[in-house]
Length: 421
Ligand SMILES: [Zn+2]
Image 1 (cartoon, helix red, strand yellow):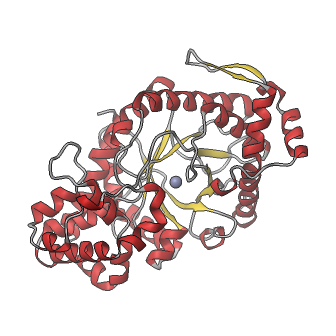
Image 2 (cartoon, protein in one colour):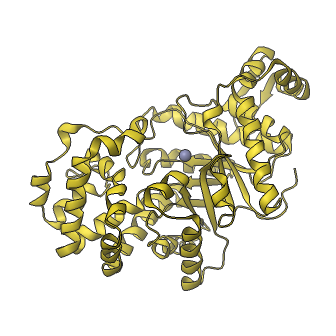
Image 3 (cartoon, rainbow, N blue to C red):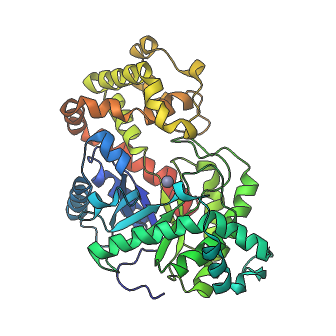
């Protein structure tokens, strides 16, 4: 499949900006990367769910991105990602976005018909048998039964992705946007073998996919580190990268196809394995680390002291009071220990330093509190409800917030993943 039109660079960073005030500070992190010798292009992503909670429209993401690019003189590509869209939600993103994360996780496991499975197996006889992956000692042994079972589980989802893709093509024209297919928001991880078979089905569906987001094994909770077997992750990630290289050369998918890691932010302990695989296979990666810019806003407000610190405390108190309703939509991706949540009264007595060191995700720091961090991570609805009051304080404290946003993205994410340090 020839990849004409828009092309995603080898290294890209998906970043979110819930309140559309930090695009410049985020772009600054990419500028810092460039100065350190690596091109990482920014992709601003925001899902339909986030837009609904905040009360924003996709056009606001585009405006903020364009303005930041103009203000800082960024000459490389950049994109706006309609994150986790479906047929139902794609419509509102068609004007503003040039990157579409087509989410078909809900269709995984919806059985394909016998006819569909038969014709897939007939089209892809080369998948049965032994497949040696370049660059690894491993080979996949795929039986006809394995192929049928994987098709049974994933074919409907891939066909759905094709439907969404063609809807976007009808509105925007082929080549005028980047396509990603995501399957990460589901319970079970996809194995590298499954990924390979899924990619064959995506090629059959005619989707010029440039990034694919599988679900990896282990837990990817929101805003906190990875929980799982690190060596297993490293092995699986390498095989995924090798499977993608195989899919590019054998199924004719775009040559820049790469993995998209929907990190849920802050998966620091797997970053070395990701970097090592990128190096070993000369592979690109798209790292989505969307949600924590909002936490850097809170950190900046707390650091500023005065009204900023007072507001950060008030947001915690309200998030604490409404924790059940705030956590419910994220139940499968957060693990909050209620016993570790300080009372709002206690937090009211905190200094700037106490607040920021509890919230800031510095690995191994004694004061860091992952339960508090996860609660505030899902608590952005509280700030959204404050409306102008919150935004005015963001504007008044722009400098201190921007410093935290840039430093977080560059030091904690870009440097370990793209620079290997
Ligand atoms: Zn995701």
